[in-house]
Length: 435
Image 1 (cartoon, rainbow, N blue to C red):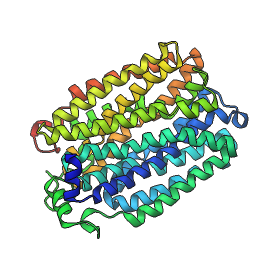
Image 2 (cartoon, rainbow, N blue to C red; image 1 turned 180 degrees about the vertical axis):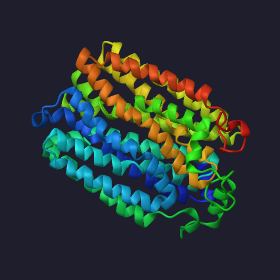
Image 3 (cartoon, rainbow, N blue to C red; image 1 turned 135 degrees about the vertical axis):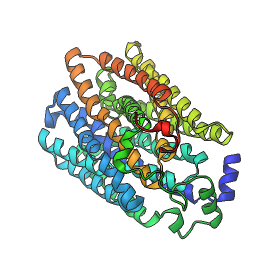
Image 4 (tube, rainbow, N blue to C red; image 1 turned 120 degrees about the vertical axis):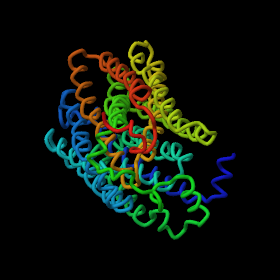
């Protein structure tokens, strides 16, 4: 109730902006996850082994990951409005072009180019939060936009399975691509930075400035840190390693999760469309809860360092139950444990994506740092699908790969609890400089 009152008093335009970002991430991840849902039903066309499926799913992440570093710089250089519009048009076109694939090679190529277009989405979103939200509202706003990825994954199951059953998989990809083009047009018309938006009130603008939003006068670069100098900091390397561990969990749900339910737990197309969405729904709640609780603790006076480290490491520990899911006898038990694991990872994610705005020495570094940590994290997108595909081909089971993912989640908890030290703008304490 208190949060609603504050939002009313200080204006709501920032929440409108983040809701638009949320919608963009929904479409972004619907496009990304649609192939993972469709692959089990494309076998008659492509005749792929699990290893080949893993390579195609990983192709997206090869280009997506490679372009992360450039994407972060690009967002800081050209701003959220132009960057997000350009990216959405690009990824929408190549989603639609998936409908024309006729072979392993063409499908692989389309997924590579899709990854290029989607690479600026997350870093742009982090930039928007940094500019539009004060520190004590940052985690919830982050949880909202990042949960768009969970919603995209959730609705991919019923939407894609329904469209495939109705029109076939080729028309499915064509239709999904059109949605992204419509969003890009709306974003170009709606978005402006706070100081340039014609509808923002002076009261809300003052609220953002006084609350520590980035990009206002006085948010100057500390110590003249160049882009390449960011890699001299222990904080950056901890963020890179930790986020890699998180995505080892998350990308199972974005790639092989539908295949696991169909082949290991014997879900039908209808059952997959209905019950396969459950982990994603629970994960959305986990992310919003993680952001809301973190903001409340910071508003109550807890340090940003304490809140971020505790919430992130705690979420990782919960996500380790993914390794238990393969041992339970009933499908509903496995689905429940996978839901808890996914929610644990998203509980952590709301705070992980708040870190770039927390530690950036100046506004012009926020997206760059987001791109750096996302670059490292998406090696998981390259490694995870291939690892799972190869291990399933060799063992005829998902047991070993999910146990490996559980162990990586434990490493992630250690990284944020121990390796990451203080959460504060880089360059302030000399002890934070590279050793």
